[in-house]
Length: 464
Ligand SMILES: [Zn+2]
Image (cartoon, rainbow, N blue to C red; front, side, top):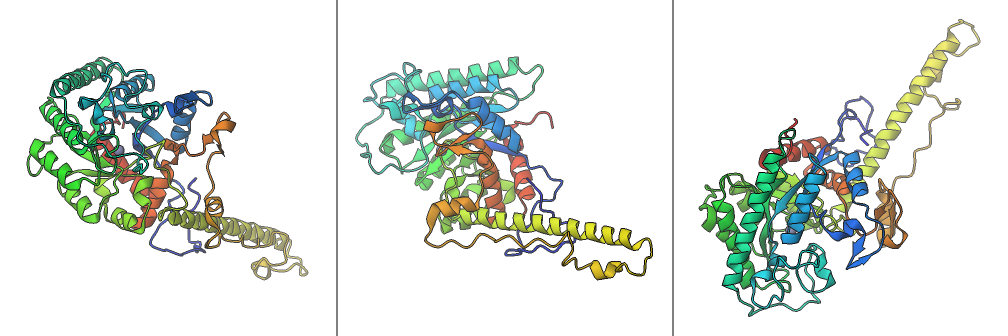
């Protein structure tokens, strides 16, 4: 894990970017994944309504904990996923926490054409067809038609909001009744909710605006309030306006703060959100382009949170941010080599000193051996560093950044392996490395800042 050590006096052979310190050897990174959709059936081996492999949720959580991601905030994005997230929080107390809310892409339940009541859809997903069983992915789907002219059913909306208020009240009382030996609550945020104008094919703008405003009103009325877990995509102006209408122009009535997760907006938008006291959630989708990475560079450490948004938003070799992972590997290898060289030189010096001890005139003195060349403990040939790829694409690029765990296709699922294309929380270390690389700070600084911000807002760490 953290073998490179900038505290030794060994020169770092690969100082391609000397402003990016490597972690000290004693630091064990710790992470909180603030946005992970573990209620998605894909983590039970179900893909588009079909079972493809055994339920491996425990393995997913185990790998996360193994890399230091000891707290997982599971996103509730519909009635069903919110309830499932709360169940998981009960099942994994102190590790899993839940949010509850209605995602903009799940907000068609507010419209008259929605054919099922939201409560009836418990076991079947809440939208149309098998796809709807999964949590909303992080990108637009250009194959889907945009919905419009589908207004709000106000009677239905009133019922939905009563049910959501009940769900939150129940979750809070259940949390407090369970807290005798564990002070952290199961429900830690209101959300995921917000606006997504990139995906109007799931829900029209009019209905999204209604859903967001109604949930903001409920969030503002809670006593005490909950922190907010917010989603904003291509909707910044309306997003900020509705927040201000609910909580005041400076969000002065927002008691517990909130995070705008999976941030992919502009630097100006990000600065406005930070100025309102909100936190910025960074995941793989935040590193897609050079412009995205420039925005990440400007996120203040005291406003940063990190997430995977699994099963979505993995960092891909095509993303601009990938190069920071490659850079990390190059440096880590160089530091490892420097350490090995130092150990070899030390061993040689010790051997030479031992040989010189009998004071035999024929024995070469230590100083002659110091270079070490030609001796049994000879210097290793420097390993070839990964070349800057050009053209030879993702396979090569992928191999430049080794996977910590074996990755297999879902058809070839095996115990202990990750599934290709299914992002999971153990990859959060990549998010931390890329943020560190972009900002020119250490991974330790990134991890500790994100940890502190997350604990402060969501209260997920009662034991520290
Ligand atoms: Zn989201």
